[in-house]
Length: 94
Image (cartoon, rainbow, N blue to C red; front, side, top):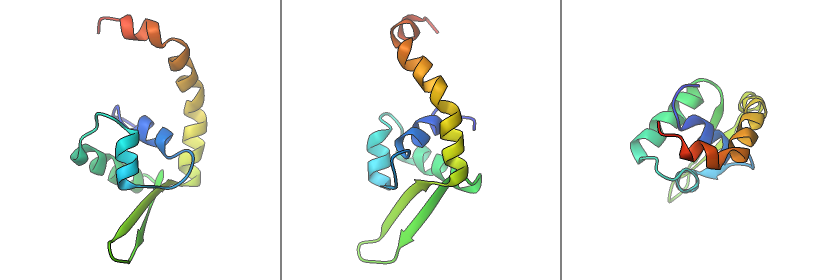
Protein backbone atom coordinates (compact mmCIF):
# COMPACT_ATOMS: atom_id res chain seq x y z
CA UNK A 1 0.00 0.00 0.00
CA UNK A 2 2.90 2.31 -0.69
CA UNK A 3 2.61 5.63 -2.46
CA UNK A 4 0.82 8.83 -1.60
CA UNK A 5 -2.11 8.32 -3.98
CA UNK A 6 -3.50 4.90 -3.11
CA UNK A 7 -5.27 6.04 0.05
CA UNK A 8 -6.93 8.88 -1.84
CA UNK A 9 -8.04 6.50 -4.59
CA UNK A 10 -9.49 4.11 -1.99
CA UNK A 11 -11.34 7.01 -0.40
CA UNK A 12 -12.69 8.15 -3.79
CA UNK A 13 -14.09 4.67 -4.49
CA UNK A 14 -15.71 4.16 -1.09
CA UNK A 15 -19.21 5.18 -2.19
CA UNK A 16 -19.39 2.95 -5.23
CA UNK A 17 -18.05 2.39 -8.75
CA UNK A 18 -16.59 5.32 -10.67
CA UNK A 19 -15.48 5.76 -14.24
CA UNK A 20 -11.83 6.65 -14.81
CA UNK A 21 -12.52 10.36 -15.36
CA UNK A 22 -14.49 10.60 -12.13
CA UNK A 23 -11.64 8.94 -10.19
CA UNK A 24 -9.20 11.42 -11.71
CA UNK A 25 -11.38 14.39 -10.71
CA UNK A 26 -11.77 12.96 -7.20
CA UNK A 27 -7.96 12.83 -6.75
CA UNK A 28 -6.73 16.33 -7.63
CA UNK A 29 -3.08 16.68 -8.55
CA UNK A 30 -2.55 13.11 -9.77
CA UNK A 31 -1.24 12.72 -13.30
CA UNK A 32 -2.97 10.45 -15.78
CA UNK A 33 0.05 8.15 -15.96
CA UNK A 34 0.37 7.80 -12.19
CA UNK A 35 -3.37 7.16 -11.76
CA UNK A 36 -3.28 4.38 -14.35
CA UNK A 37 -0.24 2.80 -12.67
CA UNK A 38 -1.77 3.04 -9.20
CA UNK A 39 -5.09 1.56 -10.34
CA UNK A 40 -3.25 -1.33 -12.02
CA UNK A 41 -1.21 -2.01 -8.89
CA UNK A 42 -4.33 -1.92 -6.74
CA UNK A 43 -6.13 -4.24 -9.16
CA UNK A 44 -3.22 -6.69 -9.05
CA UNK A 45 -3.27 -6.55 -5.23
CA UNK A 46 -6.99 -7.38 -5.22
CA UNK A 47 -8.07 -4.02 -3.78
CA UNK A 48 -9.82 -2.66 -6.87
CA UNK A 49 -12.02 -4.30 -9.49
CA UNK A 50 -11.93 -3.06 -13.08
CA UNK A 51 -15.11 -3.66 -15.07
CA UNK A 52 -14.95 -3.18 -18.85
CA UNK A 53 -18.21 -2.65 -20.71
CA UNK A 54 -17.89 -3.51 -24.39
CA UNK A 55 -19.86 -0.70 -25.95
CA UNK A 56 -19.26 2.35 -28.07
CA UNK A 57 -17.73 4.46 -26.65
CA UNK A 58 -15.90 2.03 -24.34
CA UNK A 59 -16.78 2.28 -20.67
CA UNK A 60 -14.59 1.21 -17.75
CA UNK A 61 -15.60 1.41 -14.09
CA UNK A 62 -13.47 0.94 -11.00
CA UNK A 63 -14.83 -0.26 -7.67
CA UNK A 64 -13.50 -1.57 -4.39
CA UNK A 65 -13.36 -5.30 -3.82
CA UNK A 66 -14.41 -6.69 -0.45
CA UNK A 67 -10.71 -6.78 0.40
CA UNK A 68 -10.37 -3.12 -0.60
CA UNK A 69 -13.37 -2.20 1.56
CA UNK A 70 -11.72 -3.79 4.61
CA UNK A 71 -8.58 -1.74 3.98
CA UNK A 72 -10.67 1.41 3.63
CA UNK A 73 -12.36 0.60 6.95
CA UNK A 74 -8.96 0.11 8.58
CA UNK A 75 -7.72 3.46 7.24
CA UNK A 76 -10.82 5.44 8.31
CA UNK A 77 -9.45 6.34 11.78
CA UNK A 78 -6.27 7.69 10.19
CA UNK A 79 -8.38 9.82 7.83
CA UNK A 80 -10.37 11.17 10.76
CA UNK A 81 -7.16 12.02 12.60
CA UNK A 82 -5.90 13.86 9.51
CA UNK A 83 -9.10 15.89 9.22
CA UNK A 84 -8.99 16.81 12.91
CA UNK A 85 -5.36 17.94 12.68
CA UNK A 86 -5.31 19.39 9.17
CA UNK A 87 -4.33 22.93 10.21
CA UNK A 88 -1.43 21.68 12.29
CA UNK A 89 -0.31 19.27 9.57
CA UNK A 90 -0.35 22.03 6.94
CA UNK A 91 1.83 24.22 9.19
CA UNK A 92 4.59 21.59 9.44
CA UNK A 93 7.69 22.48 7.43
CA UNK A 94 8.52 19.14 5.81
